[in-house]
Length: 243
Ligand SMILES: Nc1ncnc2c1ncn2[C@@H]1O[C@H](COP(=O)(O)OP(=O)(O)OP(=O)(O)O)[C@@H](O)[C@H]1O
Image (cartoon, rainbow, N blue to C red; front, side, top):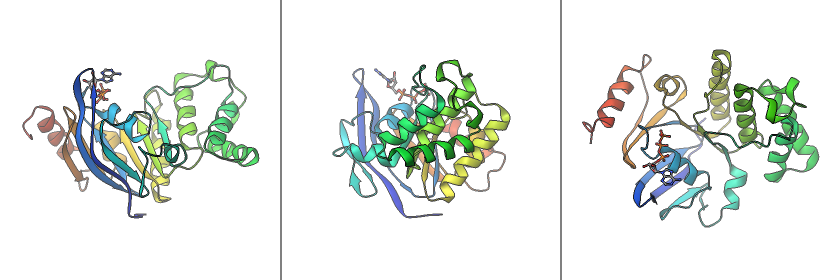
């Protein structure tokens, strides 16, 4: 379901350690769209996602979410964005259920609504049987699923996923793909950053490739079932041939 422009990134730049990690990045994203974000190590993907999630301020440029400038009003980000960072920050002494209720409450839900939301997302991510288990004793894949559930519990309009398939078994990878398409069908925009081109081919509508902090490719993904065209484009960008 395409719902018009949800995210508008305008000339965003950020320096890190004295160098431009992200340089003059501009793109828009529609509700219902799934965007794959690609780039070699150090290309600027995580820096971009940190800025889009509201965790890191751009040095320059503006980011509009649903028409509001969220760099100026960061509280918007908390309610409208669900972010799974590369290593989901969890509290070892809190249970699965306590995490989900806490994340939901932090995004403004009442306690009863937070409990309902926690139960629903735990069921969707096969965490129901683990709801009383402490995060500190979860397996890596279970931790990843809990991180995903924390990102999705408030049904955010913008879902930002950094390597979401990390540590997931093949069954869970299939479930993750279904879940991403479900959120998009419900109108959410999804950004998926990954090094696995097959993941992008499987779930994304469009792909953006960063190189040395700059956007080098932004195009829809169509008719590329085997991923050969994407692979060729990726290598051309990564070796500078497409610059
Ligand atoms: N906390 C930091 N302090 C200083 N420099 C940083 C920091 N985080 C990232 N950088 C630098 O910013 C640049 C972009 O890094 P970033 O992590 O955004 O790339 P990436 O595309 O996510 O890479 P990877 O695929 O390896 O995760 C790199 O040159 C990196 O060394």
